[in-house]
Amino acid sequence: MRIAIASDHAGFAHKTLIARYLVEQGHEVRDFGPDNDQPCDYPLLIRPAAEAVASGDCARAVLLGGSGNGEAIVGNRVRGVRCAYCFNVETARMGRAHNDANAIALGQRLVDADTAIAIVRAWLETPFDGGRHARRIAQIDG
Image 1 (tube, rainbow, N blue to C red):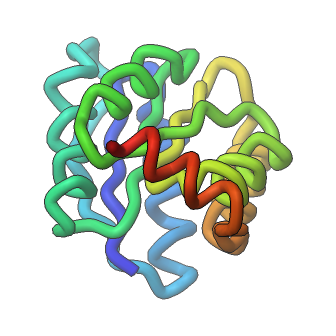
Image 2: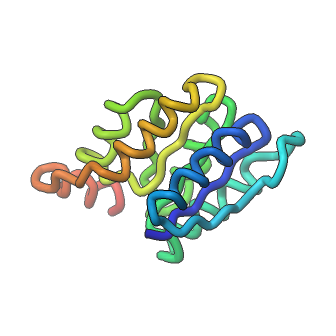
């Protein structure tokens, strides 16, 4: 699967770790930056990653920041992106199972590296439940 990844400076370390994990798992990673931990404006990096999902260039996106809040907001401003804000494995599972989340946002200052990897793993492995949730997704995307 081709997965977009982007962060701001405050999410750079987790971005690097997660990108490496994704490649090790056999995924293709499209990195939208940054390439260092120097201060940057996250919308300029997060929006193109989300747009890659909306256009179909990437199947999913991992968006990282200090808290993950701003990144989730930017991701969800792009039509066709359903970005779940995840802070533990259960929020990742529910984001996929109930919301068919094609993007997730995480905060490096709020989750440690092991938890971040566990969140990404759960999000990738959890299928969408469909059923009544599909009707709701159609209403969201409507």
